[in-house]
Length: 95
Image 1 (tube, rainbow, N blue to C red):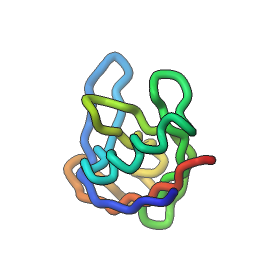
Image 2: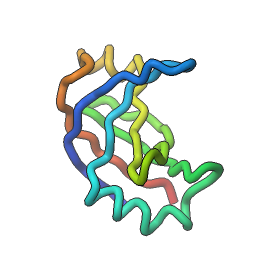
Image 3: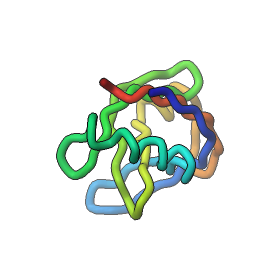
Image 4: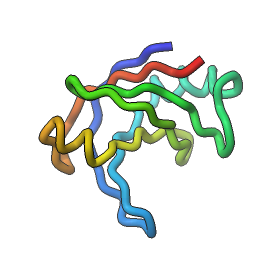
């Protein structure tokens, strides 16, 4: 399964701070429909993500009925991204 959407980069200031993009509701519905076949521990969904020309392997976090795409520091630096910017994210769900 492949998805493409746009979303804003935001920062979570928890005990392990991280940057995320929240997957929009329509795409979350598609992901939820396949989650049982690909998910592991806590509903995580393994994906290959891409923003711009930078790709990385990660897992989507389920949160409040939606999914979050974690955006690594290396990705943000490679693409020159800051909190609050809207980016286009391409996801390929691992089989």
